[in-house]
Length: 255
Ligand SMILES: [Zn+2]
Ligand SMILES: [Zn+2]
Image (cartoon, rainbow, N blue to C red; front, side, top):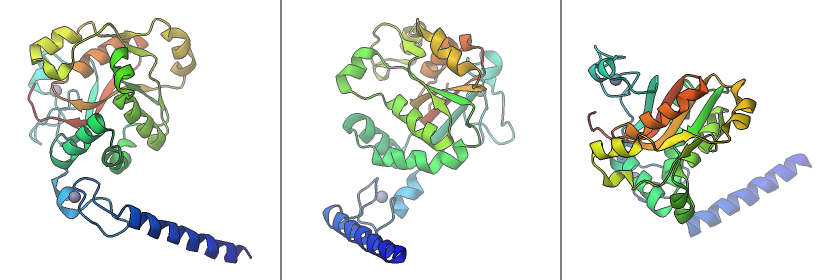
């Protein structure tokens, strides 16, 4: 009887899959080229999605020649960032860049969801059940305007895949700042210096979490100069745990 039920449910789900293939023919998540069922990424896009280098300065995450990795690099010897470690998953380039732009500007999640899913085994080597993720906070007005907090969504996905905790209330944005992407490197830093702080009411939230947390990861979608993550990490040092930063993608700009 049970076997019969299983066969029936397999038949039903095959029929549902066939129907959804007719309505939404399988296509590459990145370039939308037609694909055989069950595949998400075509060979051309797969070849063009670049993971961030493994040969980096551990502290700031910049690329280093293999003989100099894991650093510290010259920049970190001179003026290290607030965080102890910087991890980026992909190069902000090609299909990964297109997927992130499509997600941020048009709300298309599938490509970014796939990128996060693919990086999960690597992420689990760094982030575990005793890690806490804090998204880089957004100005409240921008969150209200587009109804999306991309860094928080990233935290939620990564938390689901690694079994860690995440919280969007502890670290806050103060005041209103212009969009970072519209500013030069120097203006960015000036703008960000006082942009982050622990929430006024962080203590009761933190009291419940602190005993279960070994390290804190500040999470953002794109790392460009690293200023945003540095200042967000600096504001989190008050929590008295090792603070690290994670970005989904990183541009190849130098410091
Ligand atoms: Zn493709
Ligand atoms: Zn460095």
